[in-house]
Image (tube, one colour):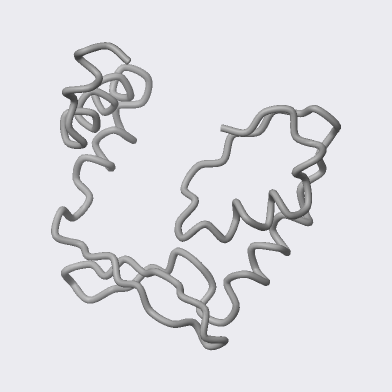
Length: 116
């Protein structure tokens, strides 16, 4: 890791990524930049007792990251829909509380060539 990267804060990392994204997709960069900075993430129990998370925006709207009923089951259903070839490389983004990653590894740990 270079000295510059070691000193980079989360905010400066975001700004650098937004600048790069703006060159490829200015509209998406603007949407990300204008997300409500005061939105909160709340960790709350799902119906089955597992934890789930939700973004609560200042206007009161809520967007759940995982299922409100059974986040592990829904993550497993998602992972089962994937069709993995042996030694295939995979990049997972937006893992939330980790349910998708766990389901993916439970099913494909031996098949995946690389996971990012």
